[in-house]
Image 1 (cartoon, rainbow, N blue to C red):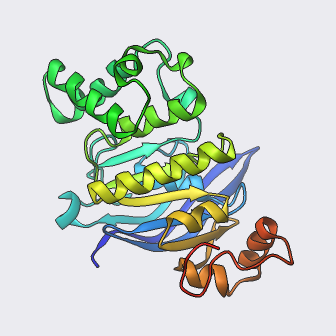
Image 2 (cartoon, helix red, strand yellow):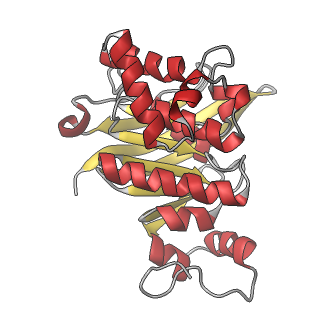
Length: 275
């Protein structure tokens, strides 16, 4: 496989109460084109900071070191924190946030919000953009697509709003889809539906996926490889089956124990299938 992006010695620091606080410290990681990578860790481990860094969404106040290099063969560009060139969020990178209620515009209909992404980044006319929005709403399997296009976010359930956010994120057929805690605000049944939806869309469009979660069970159902962050440092990375069945680090074992309980069966069997 070819690396879509290579992260080298990435550090992110903020000033808080007069002191410098490290959110990430020397993280190095490669993401292969077409792979499904999960980044897991407890709250405050730095996983969302890493996602925001990749997408170019860090606050201006952040002090950033290291590089993120993109494969020219995949996104026709390269990016580091020493230059301004790089893939464009919304066109090359789709981003799904944790809370769709805050990421969607409350005064715009679903159809117009999705069409605006298409119109802005692909340059299609408005009628073509609206037609693409209808196709996207159908792809994420919102009930009654025509009614959904006319609806405002407050008229939809949490799971339906997240489907709209996913439709907008994939509207331009991005090479990379980042889902940052995209299921944590949903109930268990809806979480499973959204994970299945993401898995299907990624497979259909051949996207690379970075799935951010504190839930190791959800990560295991979706990802081929898992990276574990703790206190802003990458402590373990490997194939999902190996991370689940034979973690090297005590911290990873603690994450597993927190989900499974000390006497639970392994999350994956020896063939890597969910138990």
